[in-house]
Image 1 (cartoon, rainbow, N blue to C red):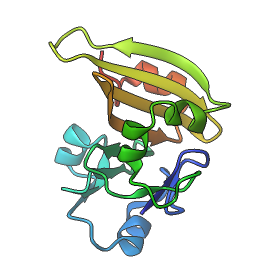
Image 2 (tube, one colour; image 1 turned 180 degrees about the vertical axis):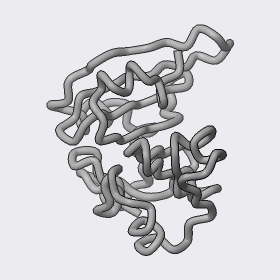
Image 3 (tube, rainbow, N blue to C red; image 1 turned 90 degrees about the horizontal axis):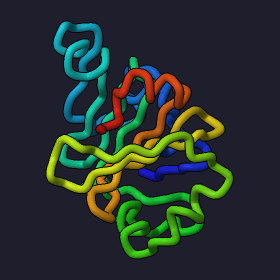
Length: 159
């Protein structure tokens, strides 16, 4: 699986791709739910998840969430480098990859003892959210929603 921050896709799949197409393209999913009370309560209306692989498509929220256990690669500049390791080993790499993206808002979580912060970037496809725990990336969310919508709804932002 290849993540492309510039186009906001995962192996060519956008955050607004319907669940049936995601499941057909990636039949190794471990969990899928849409339109149920549980999906509405816990998965923003629907999800296709790859548990243990750090990847979830939130189909109704039009978002792709990538966590630290993601083992895919990055298509920009370093196609054979693990996505998270690329940024852990290259502190300037994130800034280089996000050149041209505008920082919309920055948050620092105040409700826990962990040093967690989120940066919200306006992207050509919608919004990019990067969560850091201390200085390591813990989660990246690519969404077709506007940053205004994500900040208002706080679906993927901890503060």
